[in-house]
Image (cartoon, rainbow, N blue to C red; front, top):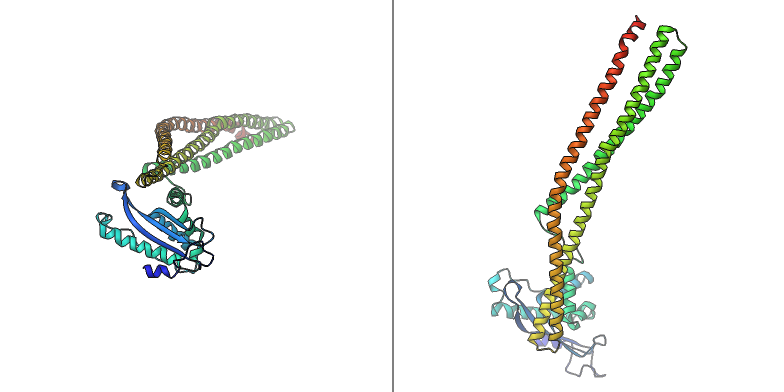
Length: 374
């Protein structure tokens, strides 16, 4: 492995004018950090180079497995057609993750991985490799979390009950909008029919005025009944508008308000997740600084405390939205059941009343019209 590394460089001083360009990378000193499910292995990555784009000739950084995965994925994405060196897989068996044998095997495989990249004519000039080898731990983990979290794909709340609620709200909006559209058509139809009967009534009365006594009187009465029914249709159109179409339209707007709240909940959840992830990175960084006894420990501790307070506030905000939303949806369902029950009852009652009134009006003319046709 050391022989493989020597292919890309020499033992000359990194900034010596006579030295050949070289980039030497090694992965050493695996250390277990964290506890329980948060536990992981960190590695010391040592870089020696005389490439001018690198900030210093020698750099030591701390990296974890997910950082190597990030580098591999970035190279796959940007260098199409180039065979990207493989990376060791994650342990499928939890109990072997922290065994000495597994840790050493992984360290060796990661060492080979970065050495092959550093010796590749194209990959060794990668900006992402330079970031991996030189950037602070926090910066690299922030880039990794962009992929884990969702800056490449949004973080969504995974909750079957909540998903069912969202599906119901979107379906309800579609059905309410469709019902409101047809209610509008009913209002329009009543108004148009009322106007047509009014016009017909005027024409029938004029026709009656130029006819003989019996027929003329019958025509005039048809005209009067038509105008009377026209008024009833116009009145019913107004009742339909106020007591049926408007309530439906109001609930379309109410559902849109619920969707806004769903959006607020999604944003609160996303912010909570992002802060939790950043806090985890800060905690990792703090562990590393304490391990290396850095003079930045105090500053990192203060940053961690501030971020923890922000994270707790974001969690409270999200939980408050969830609680209020659960209460509101119950209230909404109860109110909707009552309001829609009233609206549809008044619609049916109005249509029945109108139909009976129209039937009675026309029925009252049948005897006189039969007499004229006899």
